[in-house]
Image (cartoon, rainbow, N blue to C red; front, top):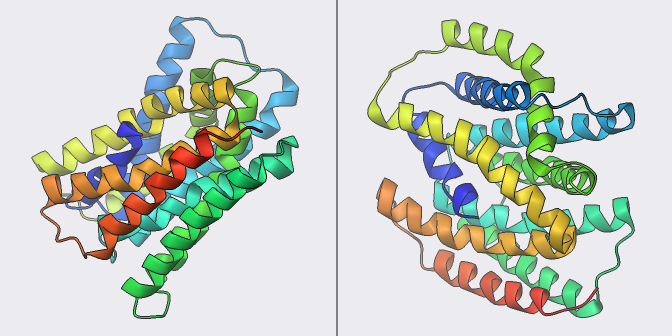
Length: 273
């Protein structure tokens, strides 16, 4: 969660020097180089044919879809607002997991997950004046595609190490991310600054690779539904970083909402499947 909580602030920094398409394509390509190097050095064999469809879902969800949609949203949304909206991700991941893997969490689990989701929806509507913005639509789309990627990655992590799941997903995207990066860098203006370079490096190495390694391992260890609810803590951490690193002003509802979903985490973690 610490790694993921820095994603939005780091993306905001990256957007200071890169266009949205450049930032996403370059971050994915850099992460793929790191992952591919690890796979080569350790001589990891290719995944079995039955795993490639799942890896494609991971690639579409967490390597391409979620980064692109959230980056587009952050062009007009604050990181604090985006962080709280993404508080819906645990519920959507639990739903996808229930449908995909057949897990059946308890009624108490679902009640707590729905309460956290309701708090996030209320915050979103209140902050947008009763209507959804274009940024919110990007964020909601990101939630759906990322939940699918998390679910499939967590399932695959039960049969192969988590770092290999995200590693192969990143490598799978290289034929797309490299040419897109090359084109985007020539079309979109680039201004290299300490912030933009630091932001790019973090979302590539920290968010796109290292964070997902431990995330998928955790999902395989305690189960996708319970692990997904731990992500309710991410908005609270991101709110801290948005003030500390970006100097954003927090609306009063943001920390209240984040605290509410934090309570829901405690409830979901104490339930039995």
